[in-house]
Image 1 (tube, rainbow, N blue to C red):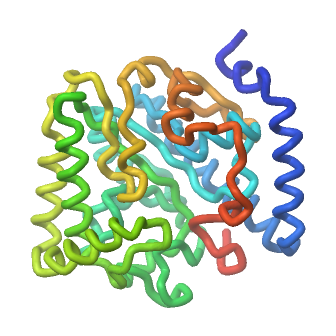
Image 2 (cartoon, rainbow, N blue to C red):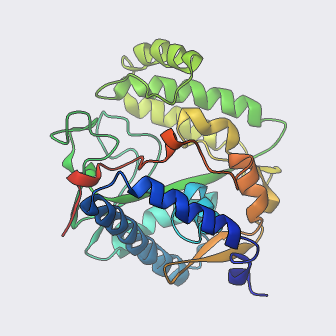
Image 3 (tube, one colour):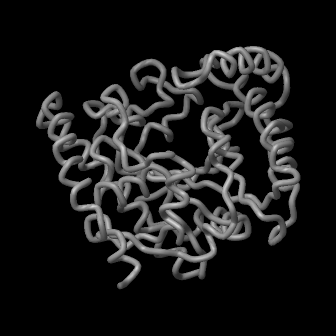
Length: 313
């Protein structure tokens, strides 16, 4: 059985069920919203295809992860209401690709690193944008007229790149604590530094205090603190990977045994063969616990883009 065939084994009943869920979701969607969500997803696959081309050319490993992997395994497609793609890269490959992308991306795409938005913080996440798009995304705070960075480049469809930093069980708890503090400081450099609905009351209090301190610090200094913390453990050592760039509410579940990424597997989404971590069930169980189960109805909605305010040219 090929690695791609593993995607299809044992999931027929789940997919039948989730097709029903999709229909329940779509009953509240206009035909325009349905079409727009599919168009956004296809655009993200187009960006990923371009990344795959460049990674293949330069012998760089990438791994689709998060909700994108969950959709591939539980639904054989995107999660019906999902509108983003997350990509993991090991540290050496991550630093290699962020140097290559500005020179090698096709004319339709643009790479922007996390530290290229001036004195505004948009998470520690590099993104590849599709130029021929216009979107009101989760960073927009006033209907798309501006956003956290008052930078119109962000109002486009994108995929996100995450670095798998080497770590170890002996130090990862300390790194996790330090990154939480650094993230809180950086939140002082947002247009509206109030945390979103997915923060716990304790996290909201922590960020309120830290952001008040952080807004008095140069953002460049906070970025230096972040890179120093994230790179504490030398490449190739330790027994864990740590994703320090993920947003605060999900940092604690983004610490993985290294063997999860020892091999690449493949999944098929709409005819696109995409690389994923070899130990699929293990990583999904760490991220989502009972990942076969569907979320509550309140969580079945696009999380990044306003469907009626998105255009693909």
